[in-house]
Length: 473
Image 1 (cartoon, rainbow, N blue to C red):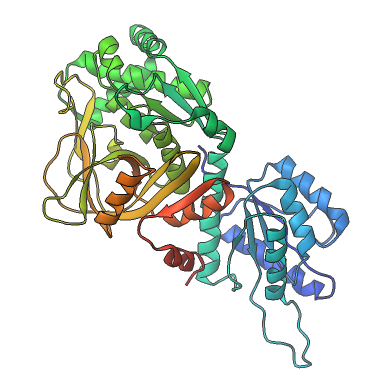
Image 2 (cartoon, rainbow, N blue to C red; image 1 turned 30 degrees about the vertical axis):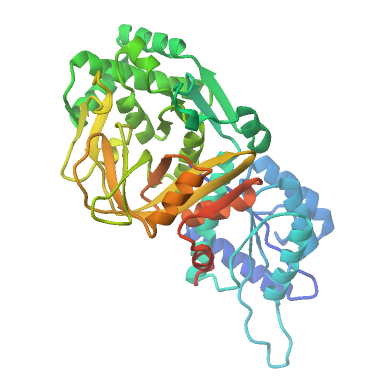
């Protein structure tokens, strides 16, 4: 995942309004994009103005944006704009669309107006609906208003979620554990509805590659062993450290070779029979490197991790968790926990992750991480579905104090736990979720516009607040 979005910038005008003012605001808009560090491609070589206003330029703009492989489209209405041309370009490209126009000044002393950008936006919005094209809208404001930068950055992050979602390929290592019916998914339906590809390998293939890498004394394994020893408290024999390092290297190579952006692994119990370890440390290290790994062959969990990571634009790493038990004294508190796959970069300041064995299995085979992670404000996400319907559960939480636990864990408080618990029990969700130290709720909410068949489900019941935030209110 590269966390890069290239914007196709097609400023537009209409001939009955001021061309000079349109050119002025085209230049000011590009200057602002440059100040904000936005990667964009303009249409300066399409015509002498670099503005979209002529039918003859539609195919040229489309061809240029395709050649440049842009990920999203931005149509500043530098005066009224030409709604039919905007929609024709957008229809051909099928990418996330951003609309905005500069706030109009007062009429001139003689009563004439230079732009009517706001009115043009009304027109374009209606025709985009006629074309069945979802779009994002930054309110009619100045380039210096907070609403402009906020709306632009949220749109870019949402476009990144859409880009990654449309290219999801999950590496599936073995089948789900036999008793985990909750981890069932419809592979054919995921492909048909969303284009999501699952690439399976068997446990024997995986184990054989690990053992081969281990025997070859691979340099990447040696580097990983050194990293583990420098960053974790080791409570297991050296051979277990080497095996988990080899596992991490094998997983990463499979993911890269097969073009997968996340991994869903059967962490128990076949693995213990053939390798005598738990995989949590390897999962932790690989997730920290930008390839999320989820437990118990949870394909929907892997999809969720990709979405959360893309929404955060590389500024935070996801962690894969169980909703487990209620907080002993806080009615809205809950324990997020798992045997130990969370990125060690998240470990609470002043502490060090332990490399040990899981408490939940009698064999206590080595491989799990033990640590409380940093709290603060987090988002919690879950892509899930059944009976052909898919949604993404979204909401916020904050870390709170709570009793010591084994494995990787964080006590959190939500707005209304009873309501959230009801959603988790009645579905379509399961006990797994993905947390991330970033407010990705507005991003994923906006991204769902561009993913047909995926509905945002806000467990905080704050849809109007999110819309207002996106608008800059």
